[in-house]
Length: 318
Image (cartoon, rainbow, N blue to C red; front, top):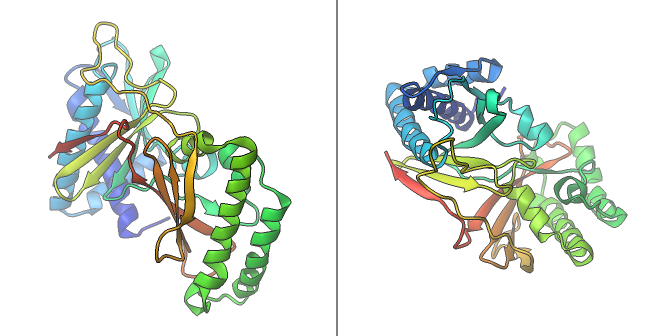
């Protein structure tokens, strides 16, 4: 179990969102917490942080949830049914690609929405690169070539020896030149090849900002008394009207890119590449080791470097 500060705060903020939903919804309709192990852990994390942190998280969550309710009238609609709020296990993201943390469910009308909750960071995904991961197939439905795996295996064979010796990453000399650069170059070469043969730009962006075919809201807590809400409505399942009420805030459609402008290393960096696309999309991908000791995979920190003008988002004060 991850007990780093970032993990503790993230889990605590998830529980703050549950409390915020109950506070905002119970005056309109019946609501319950779908208890599971994830909820229990999040509650423990929330109770473990100091009073000032809990107060800030709850204020932030209430402001964010209120904005989402203004986009989702089915949350407060009294349909004489039960609304359930629960948390997904972390394995939903790692095994299924479903990055939603908070689920809001009305089973009687077969309706649910999800929220990806972030505490003071805005990463899209933390995908891995390894000899056993076919990013082309997993991300875009197009398998990588044998040449790609041959190139990255040259690097991972060296790492395998270091792993058997139980070495730390800090003991690997020239890891940026000998590990990060060749892996990132192999990744860029393969993606460029896949793009030329299959035009996978839109599929890549759907993978990076998506949640395994499910629309969702991203709710980001900032320490500057602001929360950001970003709806990712790729499949048209968000922002639906209730029986007698339309959303107070309408979400415009997302205009996905279909062309690569440039894919290259970030200036003066050996660990980060930047993918620049048309329609105002730009994504950075920073490769890093996910643990102190050498292992047979590395992790991407993937972020939107620039938002397209038509990507709707809302900043709310708390």
